[in-house]
View 1 (cartoon, rainbow, N blue to C red):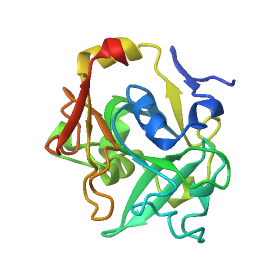
View 2: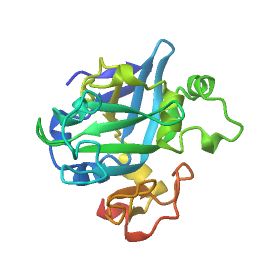
View 3: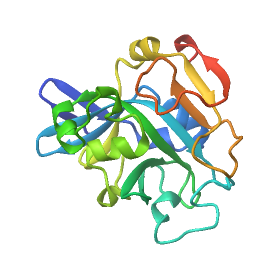
View 4: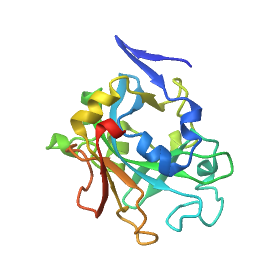
Length: 221
């Protein structure tokens, strides 16, 4: 697996096999790993602290009614980026799961900025640091993620955006945990499914007040 470097900081993309299970499994496993954006100024990004899973038989999923030009990337292969446009000129970033042809993906809802924060602040100037990437559209704006990244390989260090293993994940998980599972937010269909996961002590979580279904400590992760 090719390694990307930024000075002394190595970035090892998660392998394609990481994304092959269902989105409900991958959504939890992504917590604590790094979302990395390659820019002319270097690497920017941070630790994933909030995710939501969207499944093949899920009425809230973009792929539920079949493949279209808009959602084609969601049908695979595993480890593909699915980037879609929402109201207000915003973008959302997803990691595609499952085998090719099965429309499952994980929406990245929030990250803790760790690398290239100055560059992110030029992309999305905010008065409060906690508002830089505490939402799916916010993190895409801060990281310059848009339709150009739709369909790229997230396990390739040469991609403009990829997801990297965090060698300090257990330590960071312990600091920002416990892991919380809740129902998803901002949707009306299948809104009762327990498919949203976040690190409960992170200040960058988009909205901590959904109905909690379980808590999991770092030792159980």
